Length: 212
Length: 198
Image (cartoon, rainbow over all chains, first blue to last red; front, side, top):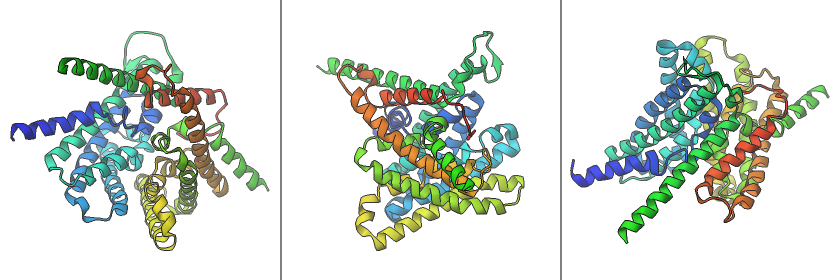
């Protein structure tokens, strides 16, 4: 891979992972974080399933490009995502943990119609000049960006609700059981989005100073 | 009469005191995206209402006929996704052929209105989390969509007031919107929950 190609790939990754984070900037994929993002195990499971599905779907749609009508693309990636998520659900239930699957029963299949897929996958498909490796970097950045926000929110809420992290007690007694409700998810995401926005504004000012 | 009253009660619950977007997060991303186009709220709300009610109406009898095995339970959500996708295709073909002017206006909103967490999620939780009969299920689906529309209008109004130079730069835009929605969701916690949707 040439240096400019590597730069393009890393730029595509960092753009979707942090700079234009899918949750904190593009406001996609909020629903599962609010509803089920109160236990780190749920967050990791959902993040792993999302990553495992988003990569092949984005790659497939990039390969397909403009060969299918624009109005049909949402149906195609929804059905494809749905099929892959069914396989992921089967693996989760049969091979990992039936109890974990029971908690994620509603939200795992809902990822197929999550704006994370509908917006990101469609945006990738429209960029027909995208090389497969860049599409993978883009999808990986999106999936990991979602996973980062999901896991941070899950960790904070689990610590507040139960005083544990991944089920391991942390040794303090203060509890905030109301953190299980979606309102705390909204507030946490708001503050995280503000922190990212502040960091980007600060970086922009420093960059402009250096350029001047 | 009893069925009508029960339907109305579930409609009002889903639209107001247990607003589906604020109490479950279903449709939250779609709502935040639609805030950027306040002029299309009513049209989008109408489309969302149609898809939500029709999806629930079609899936409810199918759900009653499905055998209660672990495999069917796993397939249930995916049946709803396939059903919703079919409804979207039918809607595109119907409006594209019969009402091309409407289709031109709606074509960007149709995928988001049809393939939506709210539409699929509400159909999914009925008979799983909340055991409802047919008409109350429709009331819940309709109330969720109307609640989405009402919340969009309230949030757009709130954001127009928050969008001023006094708001810290880091909080302008999406961060303030999310915190605002969080406070609205906190306000709804003052009501005793009638339904447990998630």
